[in-house]
Length: 349
Image (tube, rainbow, N blue to C red; front, top):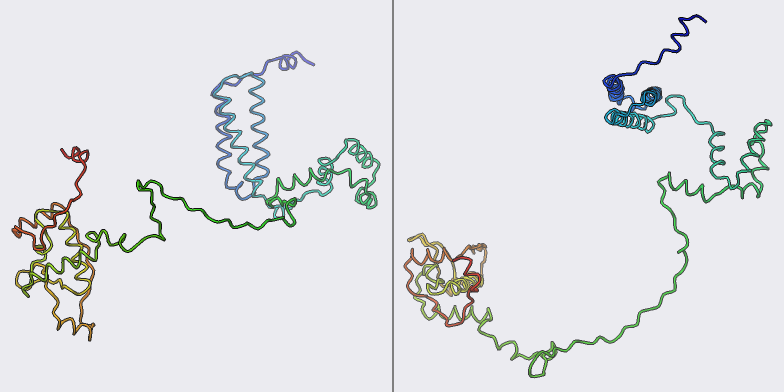
């Protein structure tokens, strides 16, 4: 051995700079990203092995040079993740038939036996048989023996199967008839309302006609008849401005009520609503007995339609000013009206 060779062998290895480490990882990461299409097609098995060897070599260099830079190790982790995703993607899309790759069934069964063995001594016995040249596939009697059947942990093998397969786990311990008892109907007790000061309570069975008719003034049918009777008393067989008919200039609430009751009179055919040819305003007029008789004989000429009216406080005031409404045609009803609470009025002040 010459002095030159000894000098070369004893010369320490050159340490890579920080930038060189970054460049190495960057080059590998770029190659991995550019090859993802091949992995998606399952054609990058050889590349996966090469990339794993390369990332392993790069990390060994870090260990040899005792590099403790956090940024370099972070770069190593990111590139290692990309290589792992690359290999996993290629494995998921790998087609064994297209590439002539197949699994050795003997190796598969050997691993399964090792995984499900109930005793470690059984594994040693199988290894000795393999060394002696005995093929376990030919020992049908040996496999069929009850003793050898019990040496396999079938529960562990079943758990592995359910873990890696998509088959749902079947529950068998609830199978069989269940003892059931028919529910007995018990008499239902009703709660008595004892809040009445008089001590008597009114139930659905004890409702009388007087209980229903005692609030007749608020009954819709009664109010519709009352409005129609008021119109008949003032009926002059002439058309009446629709707004002057139902608007009460002294009460917005009663104007809304009058509009509601008028809609029932129009619907029932007591009054007709139309547009006046002289003024162009909507008008109200009583349906004559002749028109009523004609409608019963032939209803094809009747014009019936639905309309949704928007009526608010500002519109009510504008109609009063536009048509100079001084008095209510249907009369003002002296009754207590709903008013806005004081706390709500403060919000508008």
